Image (cartoon, rainbow, N blue to C red; front, side, top):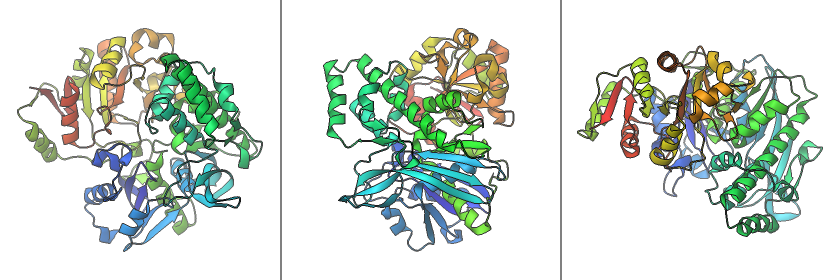
Length: 550
């Protein structure tokens, strides 16, 4: 089976045999255009499909069925018209992609919220407008699933996608992000900026928002009201676009997101569930996720899959297809082993021949350093101050670098953060860097184990020890977006962290994504070498070999 992810962004493909996921990749990693941006003459998923098919030595003739969501671009379904293609509701795919991470015998409540999902008919009072999913509430269990309600927004009927959607946290976040001067897809920048501000514009924004007592009206927001844009532009102009006004707007927007998420979870309070899951693009908001953990009355674990954005639609559609075939919840594996956390890095491994060929293309600009061949060797040079690109087996799916395609560094000096942000990645200096830590060491540096997450989708408040020994990973508000490595996690990362602690007494490393500004995270050895040289890193660890610029 072949699953396809994406809507108008974040396209992906995943290949599964029986219940075993073999490989998956996002189109952006191959096209080298962020979020898989595509042009009119090309397929937004073809590179990802070819990658998965080739990785498993298969052919398209061996694919029994192709599955995705019903807002996959028509260009794709046209190109695949000779194959059996089945489409499911967009939000249902998101929900299934979260439930698949759990044991198949548990009950879960799942909230899906994003920019917008599948069409849900026309608005009878406005013939040029249609209704779209914005919030969906699901119950999943071993015998099936049920949608207990949806909140819908109004869009404009276009060929493929609406130009705006009301009643959507995702679209409100994009709107404010754009008015702050970023691209609409740069919502992560707005989230990082919010920690530098105070929510003094909360009342102004909430003049356009209501939080209803029914699921169908849980979040009502007039994102299409020109007065909303005028208000935001007015406050920015009044303070000459200063950093403080932009940070305070971001903080006000984040407060609304936190409030809306907490409000929505109350609709699950009457149901007996073992887990609560979040999915959809808005589930990438780590600040809101941890706000929920710390304030929710739901006394169950909160799970967010690493692929909660539209790239994860591929996995959710595969789960739904298998559920229909089996009549019960399937238990997926990843390459024959437990799904979590390994499925967060489903990219293929590159052979030594492929790596050497890439190196030869850049010779004599790089040279191998034969003294560094292991995680212990790598820990030694990082402890000496090196900032290194890490190319470690399979690549990640989703926007977080989880040790497959990462830049790592020593967190003991705040100046390391400044160097990475300002000089190496040429990005805003207020952007945080993530700490990588063994799960067994989490409590030594961070508070509240509920925020220990292997997928970097929650934030934790730091202990005083972390402030003192690892200031480079502490955000301005005293938090950190932690990635924990569990006992059954990547052996390479475990040895790396243990070796670094033996050398320095600190069990934390800086982890940030391996990409240049404006580019996706690297995928291939060629991408990695090109980025390593372009950013001026101190070295590149390429699956067992270490290279320096010559």
